Every structure is written in structure tokens, then in C-alpha cells.
Length: 165
Image (cartoon, rainbow, N blue to C red; front, top):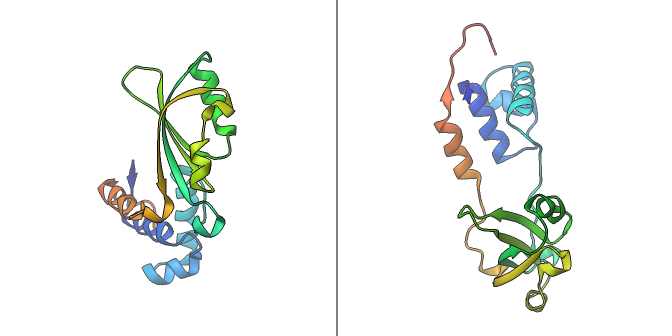
């Protein structure tokens, strides 16, 4: 993917604060707010999937996460991949690339005791082979923003004389 220098700058500012107005971004970049509106619209069509908020998990009572190694039993992979998103405590599911029927699942829990009874059999899909539980308080880093900035910097930069911001 190729972005202009201004598109990259706008995208980085939105990563840092998605609530920034077009006027605020325009003032920071010294270009018109109408140009920022056009850039934002283009980015929303091509690369921005949506806007989210960051919440303090501990204040919501979510105190641990589980890394669960599992494999599917009877259901087909397609069936699992349709059903797993409906399990509310599961936040990520990764299909392992080693050609087996194994998955790595990340689940949020309200307390450590809940992890001991944690089983994906409640979703009736996977058989658990191992669970690692980690208290949220042990999280050392939870910030993808620097990596996103680096990825944007490494995208190709297009120059255009036909489009003026």
C-alpha cells in the first residue's frame, strides 16, 4: 500500500488520538481542514476499519487472561471459526500454522478461580491441552501504537501532483 506523506501524518495522529477533529489535525499539519476531511475519508475507505476506545480492564473487573492451547474435536474448522466468536470471554483465536488442528486462544477472566474452571468445552468446540493464566496486573506492556507508527513509516510513499491538500 502507498500513502502520501500527509496521509501518513494524519493516520499517525489518529492512532495516537482517534478523537482529534479535522480542524485540530489541520492546525498541527498546517493544511486546511477540508483537506484533512478528504484524507480521513480516503483512509476510512482504504485502511481504517473503525474507531475504538481503550479501557482499564482492572477497573471493569477483568483481572486475568488465559492463554489456551487446544485442538478441535468433531467439528470442522469452518464450524469452529463460525462459532468461536460467539463465546464472549474469548478475545482472540489463532489457528496454528503447523498443519495440525490446533488453536491458541486468548480469554479474559474476571478472577483467577474462573481460570481453573476455564474450559472451551462450554463452547462445545475445542478440547484443551494446556492453560496458562496471567494476572492482568503482571502485564508489562499493552501498546501497539509504536509498532503501527513504524509500519506506517515503512509503507511506500507516493507523490502526486494531481491531488492537492
